[in-house]
View 1 (cartoon, one colour):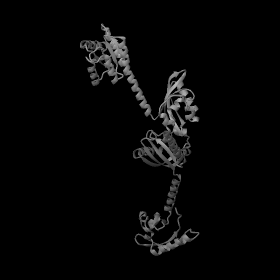
View 2: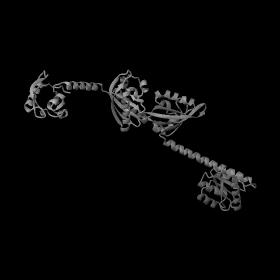
View 3: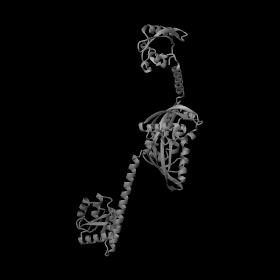
View 4: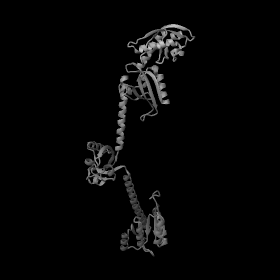
Length: 492
């Protein structure tokens, strides 16, 4: 035995002090793991056992006061497992029988050669090894029992045959299934027929057999019915541990995952709802990574661009914009990642080359759906707005080109638009008139006339326009006679 192994502390009790010292010397030479302490009386030996750890007792039989057998009986009252070797010079069948009855570990007669110490060392090592092995096994069983009792589920051992007959079931079975472990072990409750949910039985059987055929552990998820007829989801993991009469024996663990399944179902429902909402949008929805690849898009994206899902997956964002818009696009991406949001207008380039005016708004995320940085955005068709703006621009160009003064007022009489001709007539700058009341360039009498004309137009069925004569008052105070044509604008 090497010195790396656990030392064995031996108490040798013999009234012959010289013999004790000689035995200690030989035992430590015979086995370098043995460390010997000595006492010359059983009473002193008991004190030594009380005061310090001892792994094995070696005792003579014939000693004054308390002899070896009496010493053994007292030791056994205190410790049933401590190895005790009766090492005596006077042996007899009667002493050996009494020693065995008292619980001696071994019985050995003293010899006259040095070989006796090798034999004694072997008996000591064997006795201590058995006790330590038993203690380790008991500790392992305690640890296993504690572990099993604290697991959130059921540990089992069963035969790999239909019905999954159980040889061992932990106490966690009651909390998991509502059935006692004993009822499952005895077969009063059949795991397959009474516990497993019928639609899942065949699939689970096939999955387990496939894994066992390859020698791999299996993992299955299925539903069970409890003793109270409650349906639960469970997760099971197991593997083959041995063959018993050509029937595989499986050991495994089953735990309740109902709460997790419910969360997954809720999450899936939320995802489906979100997907439906996104697909129902009239706007284009997209998630695009900063490398230009699309991660997700809605159905409207396909409809507008004309690309299929497979084609969009292979596109870069630059494929959807004219090259003249790249600088705006790249600047928008940088802005979204730096300031978290961005917006820009640019023509969206479809598969057939059509350019559609679009407004894009996006938000940058450092990480989305467990992936690298990306931008989530909405694209809105602004063709109608662009068309109206262009029409307004054309109208304004026409109006500005007309030589007659023209203007528009809001409902309270404030200028909302004046053309260059009116500004030139009144000698005001255009900016000096916009937002000012019309009384700035018309006197009270003419203003009242204008009010009456408007009232008449409002009450008429055919309210096209009205004409009246008035004076325009210039910035310098000059009065210029004019003919004012007024009409009502439609409400926006």
